Image (spheres, one colour):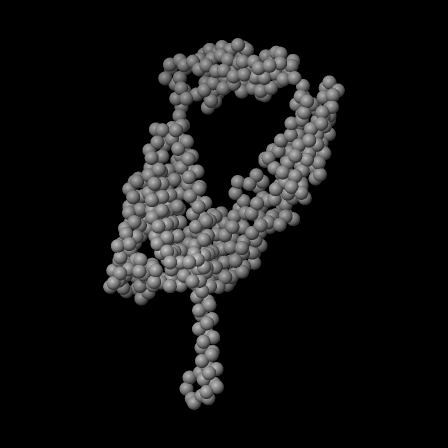
Length: 513
């Protein structure tokens, strides 16, 4: 389009062509802004989940500290200090995001957040100097890093200390030519669109929750010491069952907590007798009449220092008459899942299996008292049980179970879900998987396809579980700190339930290390 004498018509065509190219470039930039916004949303959702998980860990640690304050009391105090520091920093960053978006009319219209003015005015003043707010931002990051390392001290390993230091480093960084150093704040936030600034701050919040989780898990990593002091033992009545028919023989044992077969019982007394053995007493006596009956007595034995100790025990058992209804329970759940073989144990106390009649849609018998039900339609299924008692009387018991679909799995890279960090070389060779956490069945999944989005690159649709050549090429262009999104993960079940339609798995966000 350069050189020569062009006609007015050709000049107009050339001008329109340039305008068209500019419009395409502008549209591409807008799409990139949207991708940053979507990543910010996913990180925010992930932060909520990680925060909930951290709260559970903290609660677990508090329980351990209550049981063993000597071993876990200091760790709980440390974890609570980390939690308080993390929440303070996290909430401060929420305030920064609120100030940056004060003039934003629609916080979900990411394509309008293309101006760098809000970030530059907030963080930078004249002559590239930091504003008070910009300096406070850097100081808060440094303070959090310092506080975490000071609180944890020598209780975490050097690798974790290095990770925390790198996550919250504000050291000067080299420019592209590699010769000049510029302040970290300028490198990460100067001249960037508002949506990228908000996404970067969301990433810092993700690092806060990840650090909190890393520290909590490190504190819980060591197991409890084996406490061999005998005063920690308790005498426990362990009957074979707690309810008996009139005329039955009560069977069971009285044992010590932390059962030790080498323990010699010096003396044993109880209202029902019993035969002392190594570390336990075997019980065998008549059940008696219907009603509740006590079992009580005491153990006497020597501790390892030779001093005798006596531990009293007390329990009770119930003698019942013949039942008038069946007992039905799901082995693994209080619901049954559509398209899967759900195991059921069905029996009536005191009634033989040959006197039971069990029926329901999709139900089949496996062995005595054991059944499988595979529901296909509807929201409920009723199991009907009829039993003939020894007295000749017949009872009928219906039991209704809810039918639920298999829930959506979570996307995973190397078994890790949510936010993952790894080198791009590792990501390029990794396979995408899905997991179904805390599900009552052990199902095997096969990933059939997914989409991957590398910052600055178009979304790539991949068939199967491993990266194709286009995906690997895009990953190779990623930079350290980039967030690669793996989403729209489709999978199928291998084996049981192979005909079920599985919901799309949750995405995985991979930070390039």
